[in-house]
Length: 448
Image (cartoon, rainbow, N blue to C red; front, side):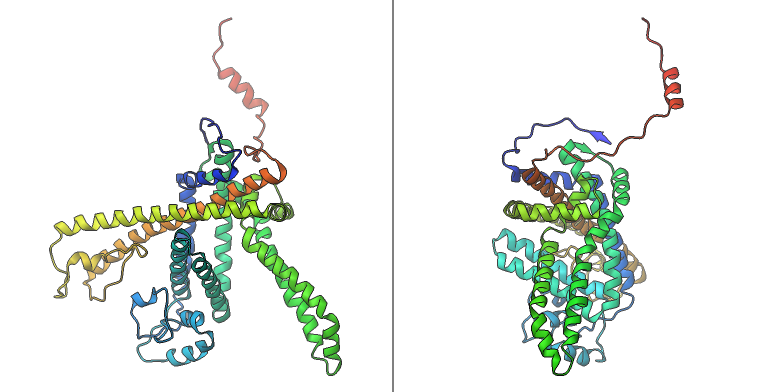
């Protein structure tokens, strides 16, 4: 662990300005590499699970159409997910019409879901910077609906994938938040190993705190409210019992709504709490709930500032990656003049490497027949470009968790007047007497 010289804090009176330190913290190699590993593991798991292709796809549209942000009812929806978003009442008929259609190919759940959500994420970023907050809300809403589609129509796949992804995100997010907390509060830059070790030690507490809202909602909704609804099936007396217990149903519904709002707005503050405190699950939940209840406007201010600043930083990182690919491809094109094999009228460079797009770094896949060596070369090049895209996603992930660590620290300062430089530091193990004696003997004696 290396230490940096303490710098004066000019932002203590205007705490929200501390949010603009996030990017410098997020792009530290240790934070970025941790997020990159998490992205690789999650995407690798998704691609492996996509060997079972179960998503019904229309064969009438091209791969470029699959990435369209808006599709009207005048065209055929490319996948059952798009149909679920645009016309949920037509999903069953869509699946029935296209699942056995000649020439129609099915796709993996992860491929469809990740592509759809990435498109909406990019739309949300652009909408925030253009102050079109209604489109940003729409992008988030459609992403949530996409997750509902996956759970409803591909339940087993989605539950397994989400559970695995939550495990990975818990470890990686905890490590990133720990590193961000140490750098923001102590001006120290811990490496990957101590942060991951700290996160693994706190894994059970953080994981239990994260799933607690879901367990509470399931308990109230699927147990208590369903029991009340079950009694309503009793002939004649059921409606009377339901009417008498209806106020209880509304009360439980209010609790469920409050838990959902709290989980969606401040649930990620639990990562920040874990990075700063030596807390168990109950303490993490209590602190984040109290800070959100007592300082809601400060939380909104910090979150809006982080969202706008994060959108700018994300587009900057994506622009650097896009410019890197464009420049590299241009200079390759200057010297590569040969055509592709199989007697095609297309350049070898175009056969090996599709032209990148700003929001699709891998580019559109060309519909060509490659030779064996061209297929190998294109596969390796595509993997390397996917790694570049993974770095962009890792930067966004690192920024997200780093920002939540800083926001938690600022809320703690506002609510409890805790100094910004106060963070839990694990006690160092005491030096053994034998080791201390050996160290003293090894040291040269100084003349008196």
